[in-house]
Length: 373
Image (cartoon, rainbow, N blue to C red; front, side):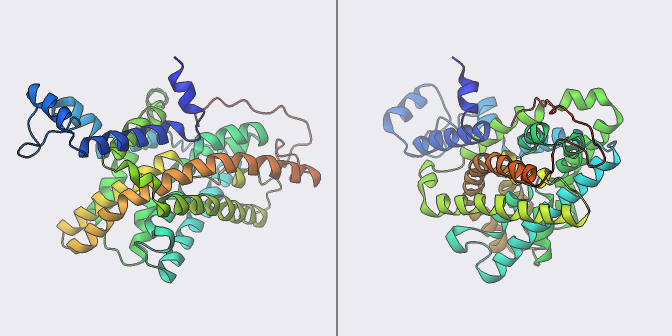
């Protein structure tokens, strides 16, 4: 039936489609249709409350995987992503990776903090929040980056992905929120970083472990996306704030992170600036960041470092931020490749071939990279 292939035709489809399906099923579930509830009752399902039955809350493995598995699946994803952070990279690739990671993160954090200064950081212009902006703008789609630099870039551009994977996960978002006085306890940072750190350690100690865990970066995304959707109302996707906020976030990600990255590359003497444009996207896995931040806020509230109202405010914006980030993912999946194509043509008009290393005068064939976007 080629279901997977059709899903992949949708930009960010492996994340977006499961997310929307989860929201659709949950919306139907919350309607509490009598016929459905009578059927569930006949099966012996335990009621959620007196007289109320939901097919996504039937207990056992099904509920654990499809309804309540969000944080577990995100944690496992971060473990797998950490294992791909190869510390043994060449000098040129290391330099580019550091430049790309730092410029993208600083751009996202700066814009997010400025937004929070001029607008409500929790629910400002178009319903955007500092959390959504930083999460979307600091985490790039590394699969798409690998494909684009494999075609339009050179070997050190592709090699920079080993450093870029440091952007995966909610760490930089938590760090940025800490700058503006949101008090996350040390244990909240440790709880977020530990899966990444353990994965990184094992992946760098044993190449076989890295290869074994590599599929987890793609395999787990549709599962935790579905779980995230299972906590949403499907109609939220048609909320004007969600749609317009997500679109603005997508355009801002492509424009600002690309321009900043190009400027930084120029300052540090790089001739070809394909890398920053190829990294100007939002990763599908960034949709898990609001849920992770909301969980960390609950830990902070429990430790007395954050009020219950502050913690609840993160939980209240998590769904909207997740939808906006998912729309940004779709938007950047379309805009980023177009930007790379035009930027490559612009560079060539200036006599710069992005496929050549700066120190090389010989022609190279485009790199073939087979990686899931």
